[in-house]
Length: 212
Ligand SMILES: [Ca+2]
Image 1 (cartoon, rainbow, N blue to C red):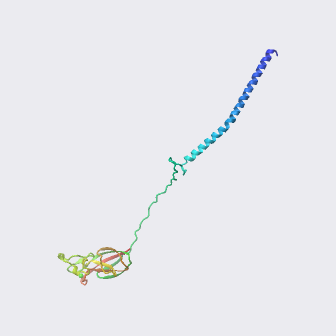
Image 2: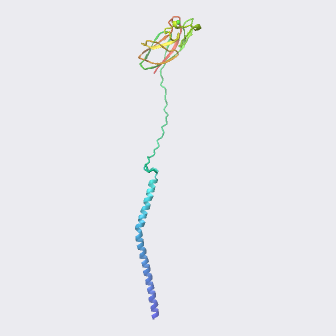
Image 3: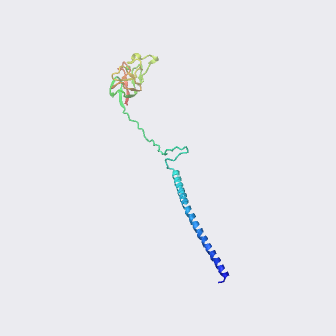
């Protein structure tokens, strides 16, 4: 090997050494960079995961404590179904007690204090040749408007009309074709035809009584 060859060989060796050293330095530098970045990458990953979890929790529609825009906690909304009202009211059947009346009648119908008594009546009674037949409402005047008070048991009630009371009451009630009243005390119901001469009468009133 002459001097020139030795010089070229030496230069090539130095170049190779320099290249190897550079590659080694770059590799070490890269490793150091990786080692410094690792903690930051880990922290960023944890933060991103945390944000995703928080977003999912906040966006949950069933979250009862989702704050409103004003910062207040809204109550959990519940849906209460409206009740369907299907109850059917069936009227209580009140027994009807029937009897006929053509004169004073002490019935066997017992009432108690506070009972609501409903009486209905129809039919006709001929109260005399002069007046003729009347229904339970009676008649207030005879022919040509003549007064009939003198033929009455109860002067101020229509002649021949149906009257009633609870046994023990001092005054008759005018019943007519329909009357509802409250029993002032307990007792039996009494009926009467407002006519002071019943011997010349014919016919009858058909009466029904309901007690509630
Ligand atoms: Ca009569």
